[in-house]
Length: 459
Image (cartoon, rainbow, N blue to C red):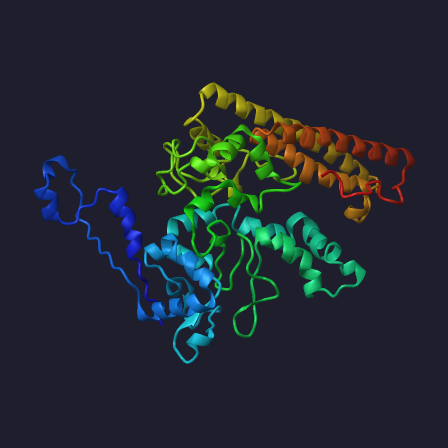
């Protein structure tokens, strides 16, 4: 069956932000000579909701009042977008089910709202999102058997999931480490039960979730349901739930930086609720994650492609200029300069970019040296078969995944403690230990019986 979509409030943006001609006669009467020759545009605003939508709200106001209160205080309710608009699906949908209040009717719903649903009203944002590292690339880190030779999948299930200790493959216990950690940020592949509802802790999950309708993306990771506050999505805390910790401490890096310091001391006074595209310096005194990577600022339009303004890949084993699915590094550098120039002088911008470029080059020197040692050990049969029980390979993982990331990202976002003490200081120490293991193996022709790394590595 078709879905009744009430879209009235979405048109209000045109009333506020655009010069709207309600009728040709009105434009002429009020001074057509001074007005550009715009085509007449009919704007129809309807308030209220359908009977079916009202029933959903009445029921959930009793059963889940917190959800309804959030919805009432958000932009969706102001635009007359209801539960019915987002949760109703076709009977043929693989996610179609019925709650107790719908039994016997021809209305089918899904508790899951996929990216495909959001795209009906936000097609541009969704298209940008699909080109970003938050979509398929995010989920691949958890599920792609080809990624890193399947080592990360094996880490989650064989080691962390205790397959080697006898836990049954595919069981809830076996998947617990993945489901409680990895998928919460990276996303899941949703599994359905006989009633077409999610099972096996596969939903809710992170930003790159693959839904049964074939679409990718959980928009509510950043735009928390059911209020969908633009202010919340703009604040650094929205990013902090995933971008933190020993491997990519971006929120810690941000709060150490001068930008973060200003946010922490004055952020409560900022105007967080300006309409998209109008949120500019003056509404805030320093950028947040959203300002630099997503928001409209100066001549730049808003974007949901978080790769778009990035120059270097600071996540993977060796830093390269971004290309292909990960963006265009040269273009990204140019766009990021357009962000910075709204508040900073050209000389400051150039110096900061040079600092990052040099930090990337320094890290690559260490990584290239480590890779050269590894290849020589492999050629001589001096690498352990199990990388997580081989001291050299364990340290090489931390050189990249922890200390190396911190050094590069600390340099990128002006956090000296992360660039130095948590970064290059530990990069140098880890590399030195790897070199010692390398030299001893070449000297003895043997792999040490026990791993020389007797901890979780640098933290």
